[in-house]
Length: 172
Image 1 (cartoon, helix red, strand yellow):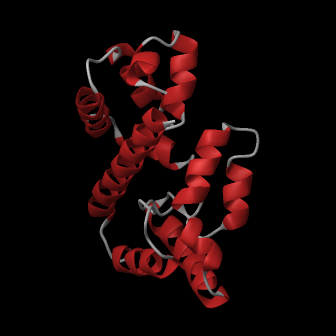
Image 2 (cartoon, rainbow, N blue to C red; image 1 turned 45 degrees about the vertical axis):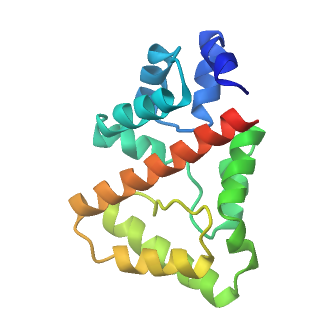
């Protein structure tokens, strides 16, 4: 899709398209209200500006639409019946996990459980280009964080994911 095509989508289609990039209702609605934009740089600037000015509730809403890192069954369940772009993107983002050892997958599952119990949401990391071992190391490094500190990191990771997905959207 080109930027011009995105700019000219009817609002219902625009909202569905933007949801492929981020599932925060407030982010999607604010982005839809800011389009059209003159160029990709403005699109990315608007996306980040809106994201960082949302509430914690809005960030947590976006987090709920991600599969758990390393949980292939979660990935399949999370995207059953949704956009093929979103499911393909999420699967691609976690592609390295599919080639991981059982030991690493079990450690990720255990770490995910501990993380969710401590912070109240799943571990969010921009998985693109990272091995399962790298994601496990990041998970273990972030577990000792204080909740406020971790929320800032998680929302930053979501911002990276959204940016990458906007780039993919405009590359299709």
